[in-house]
Length: 242
Image (tube, rainbow, N blue to C red; front, top):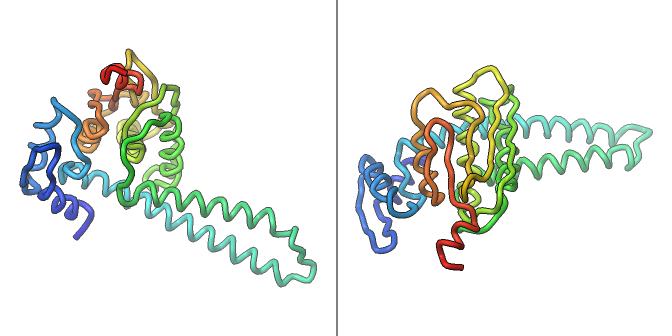
């Protein structure tokens, strides 16, 4: 069973803050929109349509990861060949080996970013999520030849960091579909107590079920034809009377 199928199965068992529902996969979108106006939804009840959209990004990233690992293997083979050279010294390969290890750590971070969901809501700076998303997008096979820039100047938020990263990845993908020639630019900034994550150019090419639904799962809401937004940490604290 694929990722979307497993999510459908888990959604049928979910109980959220006293609200219990036994949906089939085709009923999940009704649950998502029913929750939209009142409170955030759990990630596990995203619709099959939304999860299929995310799966396509995962497959593309994994193709990029495979390509990157092949490059690292070739580099390591070259380093091993240097070891048997008559004039070999440890200093010869130390810098190159260190660089390869750093690249492998980056690849591990990318795999974790698109792997199994984990982590609860926490306070963090949006620029941190932007860096993580940029690392993933650098290995996104469908965007390999595109320049991606994420400008993040915004106050802290409190939500699931991994979901915020995934939302930025999908937003970049939608921006790439809307403009197939120019660089992809995302802007993350604060407007009236909300952190907006939007594409610099208007989105087109139809709706994104994933962006619409994950915006709500993040505790925010979609922004038509541009991205999504969620409350700042300060706004949440004011609502909580803190």
